[in-house]
Length: 83
Image (cartoon, rainbow, N blue to C red; front, side):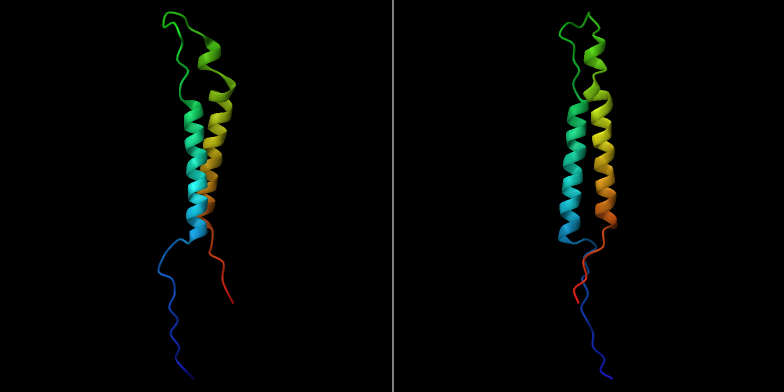
């Protein structure tokens, strides 16, 4: 029997993992950008539609959660094995 030693990768993540992490970070940043803002033109007038718009209350949190799901996928994604 021969005692072959194979050099295994010491890196925890591969290039694919980093690409998916970048995609997740961009999605989270987009959600944060959409959630920001909402400044009224006149500070003495309260405009419900500006503060609680559909984009800020619904779309942005969904994008942020989707970004976190992509990040979790990127962390748990196993590298492809070559035979």
